[in-house]
Image (tube, rainbow, N blue to C red; front, side, top):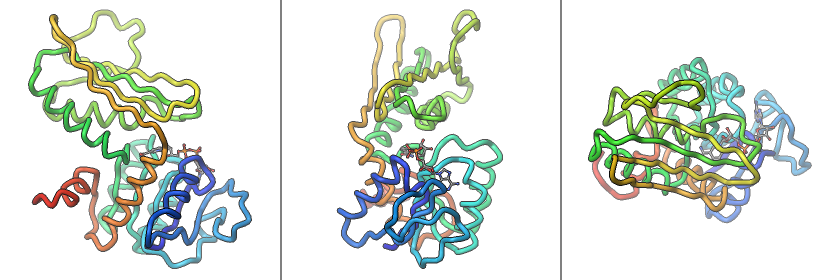
Length: 252
Ligand SMILES: NC(=O)c1ccc[n+]([C@@H]2O[C@H](COP(=O)([O-])OP(=O)(O)OC[C@H]3O[C@@H](n4cnc5c(N)ncnc54)[C@H](O)[C@@H]3O)[C@@H](O)[C@H]2O)c1
């Protein structure tokens, strides 16, 4: 599996490179990153300078790259594993447009544990239709977007079983909590890899569902699995549910 890696010089870029070295059959043939400083002959600073043949693109860069990235991937008919978060509505529309031409894997979180948490949250929210639900996430102090893409994905999982749920980010000066509110709280400090906790509370009890990532390697590993999954697929949008389904051998 020949991979083009965008965001090559970043924290996640480094993790994906290390993980690819440990993964049989995986090879980073080209990196794209405007701040690329390595002299390994693989990294280039722009999409136009990317000349190598590849089977798939893995992207851990910045949402502002979305337009160029989707045009590049669609132009070269390359499957795209999109791991970057924080896209604007306009950028999300570009991703949907690209998915009509190429297979695009889109997940706010490439950890299998988060996929499991999302499933549990949905089930618990359905079992407790009147409970108050709040989402608390913690990340390192370099993270640009808040709340995290994963926290928003957890909110959408709640919304699947509570269509009237409303995301409330921050709660300053908003008065009393409304039953349909789902508070989403972002903590930014130190070097925290990623903690997501969903609290589901009635008047008499509280359930806490929590996932903690110990290392960024978990996201790199998941993105490589997604890349292997995506090669040869029809154009369209794919996510962790599809990967889990294929892994378990279950029917779609
Ligand atoms: N989906 C997931 O599981 C998951 C997990 C971790 C991080 N992320 C996301 O991945 C992204 C990167 O995270 P990070 O911690 O590595 O950030 P980082 O800032 O350490 O690295 C980002 C890299 O992207 C590069 N970059 C910026 N614009 C670019 C462009 N136009 N083309 C190519 N490269 C470009 C930067 O130079 C930098 O080296 C963030 O959006 C983050 O939220 C997603």
